[in-house]
Image (cartoon, rainbow, N blue to C red):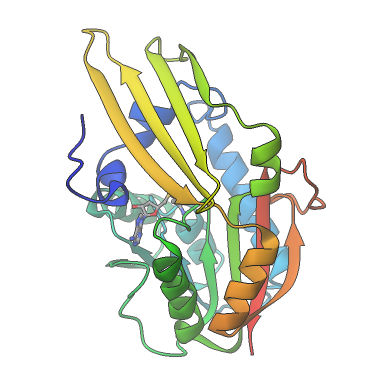
Length: 261
Ligand SMILES: C[S@@+](CC[C@H](N)C(=O)[O-])C[C@H]1O[C@@H](n2cnc3c(N)ncnc32)[C@H](O)[C@@H]1O
């Protein structure tokens, strides 16, 4: 059991959560290099969607192990990666060395990055790294994004598409993972708050149960538009994935591009 006296987002990412919770399960084929290739394609999409022709100042907010940061730095952008997890930032620094790039890594909370006002041309927030707080905290994240962006600067956020999640909601899934361990995922949706509460259990070979709970506030595109507008960000485009596909109620992902006035 993980330490539940601390917020889940501080404990989940202190370890390799792919290994313990996701790797081995379907959808995370990261052992054969396909995850790296997928990230290459995601970065190519970002460059196209943002029309990044000149090197720019770019913040990867909640950069995790820095997979987008290092690739964007390789393309010449001046990248800052912010994350709360020292574990992930260590992985990110190793990645930067592998890629032969300089990235500024910063251990900080997404609500208060400590970056200078209007210092960034672009902020990205990738792979469901939003909705970790109650509404007021999530709003502070959007305000922080707007604060660090220069006027005209752009923000791309990539999330689970709530509409499609509701259509295919599975309260419980279990089975043998690719790594041979048993995994159980239990989910509850709280309609009053729009929050999905998940409990992930992995049963180790010796029977030990590793349990991690987390809760994510799921926003629809319309809610995001209103909240971003309150923070001074105007939504310009939305897609159903990092392949640039059309957003429909079946799209698993929601990608939003917004601009600071
Ligand atoms: C789902 S991962 C996404 C990582 C990365 N963007 C990617 O695409 O691989 C979410 C990341 O958010 C970070 N995080 C969680 N809570 C945070 C907070 N309060 N402030 C900053 N980073 C946070 C985690 O440490 C983790 O690296």
